[in-house]
Length: 297
Length: 216
Image (tube, rainbow over all chains, first blue to last red; front, side, top):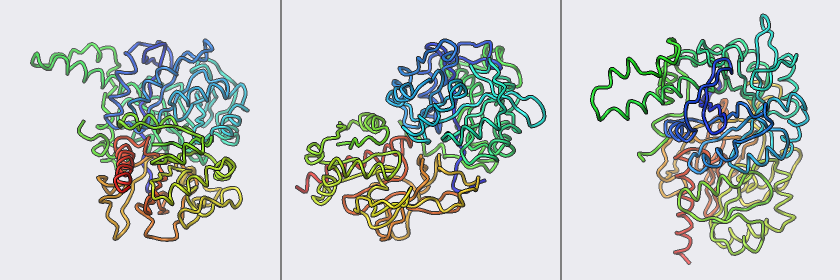
């Protein structure tokens, strides 16, 4: 591991309309609540960055994130990365102006790779994240998907990543379409192939079902950063639910029979960002110390 | 607070952070507003050459030098810190504002090497320099080892060790991450994106304004 560098823990909010949603393998989206419930809590708990992805934007040719991001940017002082439905340099400018620090581009970059260069030249590579949705084809072979994992492109992931980096991508956000929402662990092989081949940071996404999965993608996949969704979202919802009932007394029954746990596959281990960071620290992985993040406010 | 707009990067996040802290700020590209400012912030993301050219052509370089000469506080952030130096080697040799003796150069890792990755994007620790306490400085109230959010490929090499307020290590290379020399401050990281600890630095800079005022 590179000394001095800390692994970034990045909660990922998939947005549909005004809500945070979560699906399995990018399908069957379930509404979890408003982003305002999640993002400030994650900031307070030590998120190193927050990722907003408009899940259906590229499908309907729109981007509704500006407003959500501009509200978030008023109270959240870590980098905000925003993606979904970005088609032009003007779209990038509008999101940066609304409060995004970086944008994640997938569908349109595949259609028109020049967009990466145009955006990087205008705003700098540091704010251009190329989002890659990868589906395993065979041993060490992956294909790029677009439209949030719905459409194949025929593009080989390694060849596309090389082109994206040449065009000026500052980071790669790599989501495994096979693992997304399953909680079966990241696709460590996919992440390792990319993280070892390219000189830009690789953010691993898709599949985290436990702290152990996160540790594995850092140790085995050499991820520079990890994007985590379900285990934080359901963890937070459970905490919120418990807090609501706490004054009424014993919450053990709720813990055991919580509807949320029934909705989630059994193998998910919900956690919070600070708990995950403690686990990472115990595994010898350096991350930003939770205790130093938010003063007693 | 006056935030200098010279067409390099996102200024609104600094404005939002200051507003959150209860400080009013103005974003301006007018030399006149710079001249009357109490306290200047020079932000910036992008290439050194572009940045210094825009400052020079607009006449803002002169206004910034005059501001500092009058003893009024200046904070350079990221590229804004690098621009304070004598010169940079980013895509050719460029002369900087010359407010802090020293140079800007790329991380000294081989260009074809995958690790450590460049740019350095992420959180790194700030460390004290032997013999210099942070009490009463821009970093007053911060702890050794606090993490800040960095995005950069180039670093400053400061000639006078006394100008270095903090250092940071990335991939085995230690460089100056915070400068303080009289009213001139600079940080390589983004305090407006470094959580509550970063906000504490911005807040401290805003109180330096008050100190400068009371001396008048």
